[in-house]
Length: 460
Image (cartoon, rainbow, N blue to C red; front, side, top):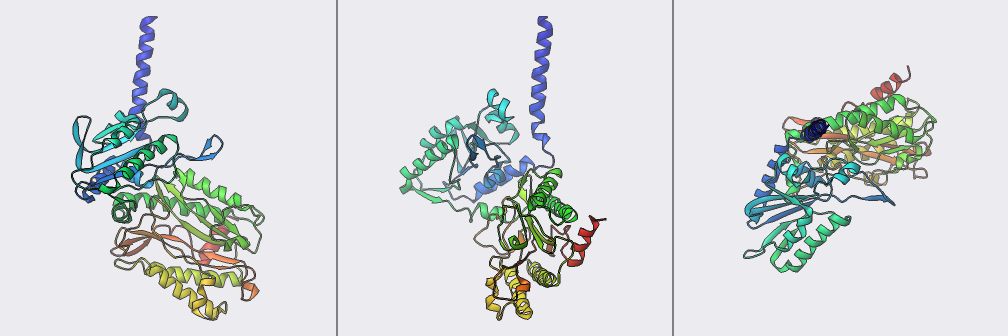
């Protein structure tokens, strides 16, 4: 019996080892670990002599009582490590620092292994596995962070610190951030703190590499296909939340782990609320439905908006406003070329909409456009839906941005009532290339003819 027990125990150990060995391979299509290592090396090379970079992950956030929101790592931290666990921090030293008896240039502090925690919450790397799998020069338990910080050298040269960090944190991460803030306060006369990431991480993240573009293409494709399914299933008298649920199902069915942001699904008068997220109203025939929804695939998010007629066919006033927004979007996309200013698309789209609304009689002069178009046309897109931006945001190959003009005419607006409660936004995700702009979310139809055809295809 003893030999049998030993065999079973040995088999269990082997099975557990195989599980750990395969853990990182469970996630298909992920960014190669070597790419994260390359990014850390690049960031460190951008630091001045004697500089440090300190990047905390996000805290776990309480939703209510003892229920947490699903954890999502800080984008800077994820970009540099690929690690999706809480209570962690990366420390980079331009010229190296003595740690555990040797000189190192990068250290990851993270949660240790704990069988009880893993029973409830799942696999954790622990410092040892993290060092091997994530290819870190040195790792340690996050319990060692406070002592490490207190022993940090600041002389003989003045230290420059890059330290983007979360505003709020739970007990473990909060203690770590508290120790860091106490140290920087104590030594502030000898430190230059750069809490804004624009000159370093913003510069790196703004121009996407081939790996990031691949993941963004997948996020955009999944999101566009999910929009198409909602177009096919949309019917009058259905609630907005049914469309939102169908959208989220499409995202997750095809591999997106998260929503890139909360779904915006507004019908009728709610199309004129820019970030409407209640998604509760029953939809009515003859009205429009505006859906601003994007899935997040392996950290990278799409941001796609389509506006559709709930009963499958645009009314004439809806058609006129929709076509104007589409024409403006086309002009904005065409402006997204190498060397253009980031705001070139906004100016091009605004000019088209101002002239068009004057022609339709909705406004009397172009300078009144702001009454019905009150947001920017573009933002950078990547690991965040409003992604990192550098100091110089000139468009270059590899930049990815949205183009999302909109017209929102609320009830009671000073124009013909036939335009009231018409809100239209069309948004796509555009990759800047040397050969011109590429629409990554083009699988979702945009023209009036193609939108109506997509909706008819679900009614056969």
